[in-house]
Image (cartoon, rainbow, N blue to C red; front, top):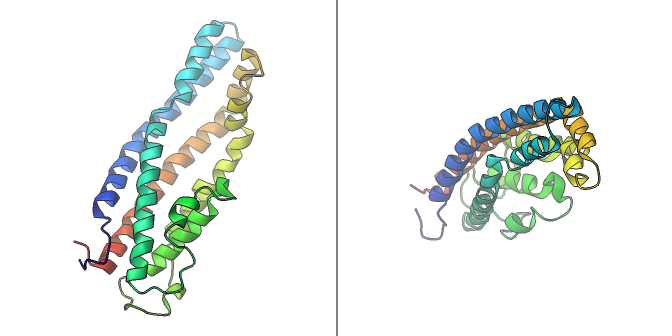
Amino acid sequence: MPSQFQRIKGLAKAIDILLIITVPLQALGIVGLLQVRGKARDFIDGEISRREFTDATRVNVSSLSGLLVIPIAVLTIIVMYRMAQNLRALGRHGATWAPGWSIGGWFCPPCAIYAIPWLMFRELWRGSDPTLAPNDLGWKQGAVSPLVNVWWVLFGLVPMIGFVTSAGLVTNIGSIDETEIAQRFDDFAVINVVLALVAIVTTVVYLLMMRQLTGRHMQATREQ
């Protein structure tokens, strides 16, 4: 591997492992959602106490898969930054997204739908084409894997539905009583389970996307 390129292999492997671990934890989260719905119905029917229901909701909110979000995000930012720098060394002139956008792009409006990271992933995909010669001026016209667009739809757009369901519930949890909270858990149970299933699919798509993106990038930079 030429010395002007930054290595990403170890970071890519770490992301791969964390994503694989995340999937079963997300599945456990769905089981937790179903259990909370059962507790919500029991509370509405007067079969369990207020404290039992409250304890059940606290356990559900602290999803184990959420513990892996931060390390995956940090590693992703580092990999994107290094790949963007490597594109410069490959002579991919005229890039829209400088390395710094690998950090700022996740927080710039409209940050809720992650449009900038999506666009940057598309550019990184094109620039990482191992069949392109150095300083090829036509690199920005290359094709992009459908996985990049599918990931963005699942990760950036579909979760917006959650703002009127589970997100709204958590936001208002201090201003409504337990009976209404239980009713909301019951009313929105199906859509929240669907969103949780989408999250699992999103993780799998992201896993495949990152494997392919980092793989082609390492081919382009000849990283072993």
